[in-house]
Image (cartoon, rainbow, N blue to C red):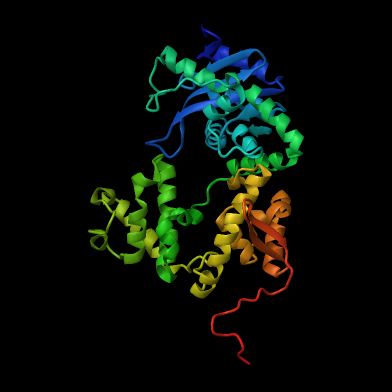
Length: 399
């Protein structure tokens, strides 16, 4: 355990044991990670930074087993992170658990009007300090780490608890603590839920327009790609590109020869048993029913929704700004379209229903109307039900 400036570098089992013994009794701690995943399916953690009380440590996962941190995450201490989703994935993989209590300063800042702020942005906004700019292409897995790298990593957590306090004061003043806690709970729920391979096709933009058999095939091929990427710890694009998944699904090949020449498909990806395995996935999809939940909707219905969805999207963005909430937190266009189709979504429950979902439903029911107010933008108001008469040229005096 070597001391460097204001932090300790932990790379021994005994050093980590001492840190854990102190952390299990801590009421709150700031945590961040450095990791790479450019060439792997799972994030490969290279450094863990933790600050609590008057201590700051940098833990080297290449020298110690991060599984030792599990009791800390299972305890009652509040873990404060910034943009925590990928860090949670790191700890779920390395420790087998995620924190039982979590706060995310990026999410929290969204509830006081800051739009998806960076960590550096929060330091500038609340502390009027600039974080040292790290090298975006730093190899965090290379050892030894130099002084600039260590200082950069330490700065990510050194004042994070202070920022958490300042945001918390504003949340209390606005009465939004419960809203934020609900978002933290949802973040932890997602972190503890493994990605369903059968749903992975929904992340492929070009697949949304497929129908019938190609849709069933794209679901099967995307699931095959996901499982293969996990098993080999490779990015899914290294197994098969999105373009190749769609090309295979449209062609519905039955032999290795049918695979050749498909757009986006590299013949190197078909070596050995890979081609046969891919064809088995295609065959399975060919025999399956297409996913019913996301069957393409009637084009006429979609066209009818488009103007209302566009208008409501503009109102929702403005409404969020008026409420001092990041619009991305309040709702998306997809959420709005779900409300218009009377389908469950984020706007159907909790604080979002009261803030936006219920007013939108009143608009759909004809009990509310949107008006444009000069200088104030769109305003949602009670509907008067008094029609506005327009005198058309040439129509006056007609019986």
